[in-house]
Image (cartoon, rainbow, N blue to C red; front, side):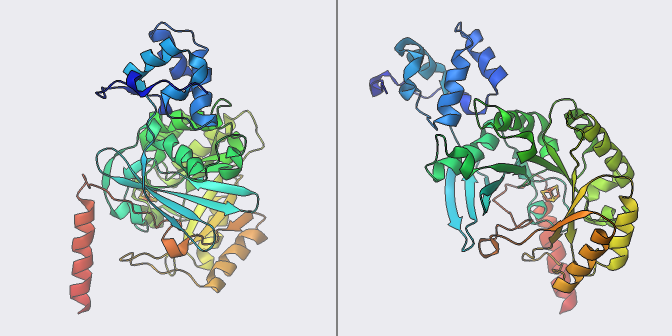
Length: 384
Ligand code: SF4
C-alpha cells in the first residue's frame, strides 16, 4: 500500500464531500463531475466499505495525482463513537455522536451464526408513540446517509472485521433504531442501497428490513425504489386503540396502512415474501385474548408473519410488561389461527438496548420532552 506523505493533506479542512454516504450512482456522478472516469467509483466504494479505509492517502490504486485532487474536495468521515457498552448476552450498544451535538444509538444483536444491527435514522423522533422511549425525547433532525451507513461501518470497525469477514459481523440490518425511517426517505433509501450494493456490504434484500409506524405516502413511494423487507409497527388490532398508541394512525388508519403494505409487497419481484407485523404487548392495554382474536380477524386476508414484543419498561413509561402467561395466551390464539408467530426475546436489557429503550441524546426541537416531563410531574402530584 502506497501512503502519500502527510504534507499532501490540505491544512485547512474545507467543505468537502463525505464519500461515505454516496451510493454507487452518486459516486460515479461525483467522479464524472470532477473529470475522472466512472470506474473510480468502484475502487473508492471498495476501499471504504470492503476494506474500511478512511484515509484517501491510503487508497493506493487511485494514483497520486487523483489522491491529491480528492484530498482537496472530499473526505471519508464516519460518525464518532461516544461510548460502547457490552451486555452479558453478547449484545453491544454504541452511542454515536453526530454533527450538531446529538447522540443516536446503534445495537448489534448476535444470535447463532447471524448478527443483526439495529440502525437509527433520526436524532429523536417526531411521532410520539406512547410506549416508546425515543418518542418521549422529541425530535432534533434527520441523519444524513453517511451517518446512517456510518453505523454499519462503525459496527464492523469496532470488531476490526473489515475484509471478507465483515458480513459475519453484520449479517442483517433492521431500520428499527431511533426515528421513523420513512420520514427521512432519501437518506434512508441511499443508505439501504449501500447495504445491498455488492461494492459495499452486499446484503441480500431479505436481510435488510425497514420498519415503519405507517407513513403511508412514503411507503407507497418506497415501492417503486426499494426491495428491502418490510416490517409494520401495528401494536393494536383496531383504530381506536392504535390512535392512542401510535398517533400517526389518526392520519393513516389501519385499513389504509395495510392496503399500502399490500401494494408494496405486490411491487416486489419475489412474490413469496410477506411483511412482518410488529406487535408490542403491553400489560392490560393490548395483550388480552380478545385483542388477539381481533388481530386474527383484522389480518384474515393479509399474508404476514407476526412478531410479538413484550414491552420493555423504561423510566416514566407508565406501562407494564405482560406476564409470561399473557404472552403465551396471545401467541396461542395467533398460532391456532395458522400464523407464523415469533416472540422477541429481550436482548441487552442490562445496557438498555432492548427494543423501545433507545434514548440517545436529543436537542428537542419539538419541546415534547418538556410536555412529557410536565405530564409526569402532574401524575406524581395527583398520586401524592
Ligand atoms: S416507535 Fe418508532 S415511530 Fe414511534 S416514536 Fe418510537 S421511534 Fe418514533
